[in-house]
Image (cartoon, rainbow, N blue to C red; front, side):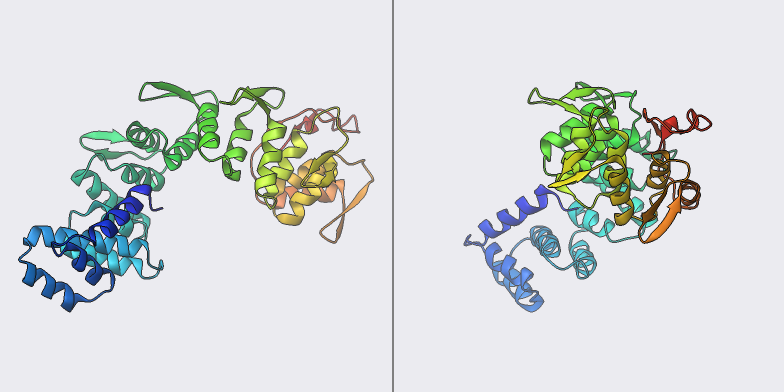
Length: 340
């Protein structure tokens, strides 16, 4: 992902195009991919080689950012032949390489510029949960790399999302002068990107199903409200429909979502219409059915046993406990656990 710094650099380049020292002409020659003109301008203006190479490399980096993804690697390579220490070009190239090569490029960036935030995030993204990497003499894992990034840019959304993904609900981490929990991190993300459905979904997973959390504006938010907001922003989020079945208010018989009323069963069916492989939705639907009841799911008639069989053969997601009354004594306790 290209950050604001690259966009800002591009604007500076455009402003420099009006200068009378040849750099403006040089910039236009570079972005128009006219190497002969570029060379001629450099010779006629007697620009220092280091300044020329650095400027051409930076210009090429901005050109790569504005180019189609298929063209970017070649342009980044060209930029690096002009200036091997261009960290933005190294970072751009790392986004187009396999994980092992990307890690190596990102490690090189941090040797050149330890303050380059995107490199910490990219490196953390490629590390396994139990993996460590040595950066400036320190052994750092995913969590520590995200914290390093956030110490430099506290509002970096990618860093916040990445850190939240590393934490359990109970764990606290120190970021700069703040002590943050997973739910506090997700609330920061929601405040920074209020139209981001995955942010609201991430926040919903950290809210106690029987409680609420206070947002920065002072309002209280329940898990149900966070999931409904997720679906307003992304009506195709299958797992949000499934999870909403589990956080369904006890007093409600139906929920209004995007102008449609859904019962618990209806939420499971909607989830399965969007993702027929969503294992927990089959399990949750089975929990809501009578022993001999049948239901049609994506054109297939299924009993409770059939739904449970589907839940075993499809991909697992995870488990969360909710209070749902099963209608048979034999399975009453077992089916108190429904899957999110």
